Image 1 (cartoon, helix red, strand yellow):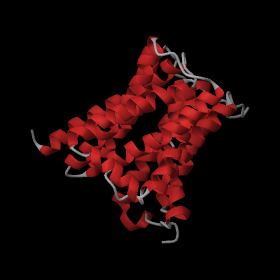
Image 2 (spheres, helix red, strand yellow):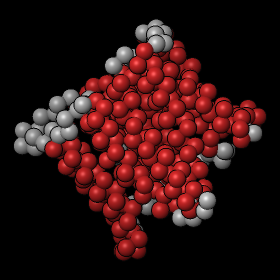
Image 3 (cartoon, helix red, strand yellow):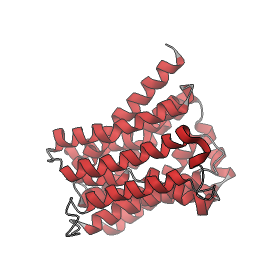
Image 4 (cartoon, helix red, strand yellow):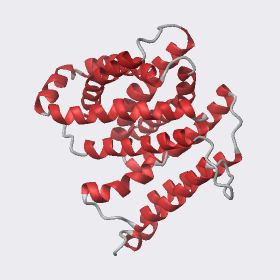
Length: 303
């Protein structure tokens, strides 16, 4: 098979799997608390990544990378999986899946904005335009389309969903300083994060029960949100001749996710969700494509 075809195969597999996890979140949260779901998912992901690294002959690299930068992996492990997924799962626990999903996709808009003060990057005009459009979509989703009344249906859940985007962006900004193997680094983050998850769970709630549909959904989350799918996406990027061609596949994920949410969970998809998500995806597309179309005219705010 040609390298380009392999890249699309890996990329489509990753996107399809990521499209199902919002549904799996809600199924698992019907039986578990966010901490209990996170506990099972992280253990599952560690086991899956151990198998993958074993096949790749990189298990010994785990100890080596840890010895080189223990404080760095302490930071990444606190951010992801502990804080990020705890906040994200709480958002899904409080909100309809369609709302939590849509709001979470604004992380890609927030990332270049945070990169300006934290990484010293220049702010592009397209980033500002994308942010205005995307957060307009957030407003539509948060108010359920009741723009005049400005009544938030579940303010805590909305704050949690938007906070999760901040934590995810901080994780990726910290990760720009990582020189190690990305799969090994992810494994170390989960290994470091697991004790924090375990202690927080035992102090506040106790161990989950390991049976039923909730367990299957939690294991699914660990495999296909945190572990295997990340590796598939890396393989897609490595196999691709042009990263941009593969990255555009991500736009399919929220659309497919909405379909799974409606089909499996039976949620009635609101018009405000379609409008808000449409604005967010339009903002992402503009952020990615406008600089290619107009070049330096959209490069920076002070250009």
